[in-house]
Length: 292
Image (tube, rainbow, N blue to C red):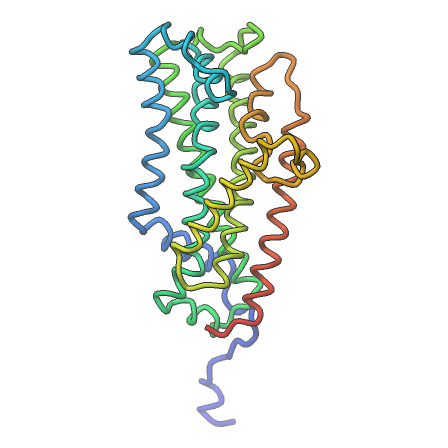
């Protein structure tokens, strides 16, 4: 037996040579070093503070000027209510800012790296396409989780500072303990994270077909607007159950009632899960045939 044989390193072959945890950690470091990602997360965290301070400044005048839509009703209910404030803030950002954060994360994950030439390194590395997509999907999910939880933290803290712990009550007039209110807020947060993860999965699917991140963001936001408009047309009632944006503003309000309902929350969660699976499947089908 020669010396070369004794000192030869053991080669690792196959697509699972790199641990998944190491890949995820590298992806997250790359994500949270992007200035635009940090800027969007910071902006989202400021939304509940701005709403809370604004409602405090206008005082009870807000209760008569909330408007007839669901968002206006939530804003009116958030006056002097530390429980409603974070939920109202999250619902308000569902129309643009939260989908924007998810779309940006999905666009940067594949199209952004393809534009910078770094995606090819992933494709020729000893990592299977399925593991690559898993890492990208986890990264998008973490961005949405951080965005929503950041809003929850600032919303709850702002509400408690401005209104105190005795302002935790439902729209039915029931007073909640701090723990009970936090559980309901986290339930809404988890539901919204799933919705935004589904938006991110759609962005990943679009991102796998282009090298232009802005095209991905524009496409996803345009789709979000089209879905919202279609949801307002009563002549298309048969299509509404298939629209991801259906009941986005109504479902979170279920936790504000006592007793709490979960019909729309459950329906929305199932719909988002379907979009998540379909989006990731399309992205995987494209990545499995992509060389660079």
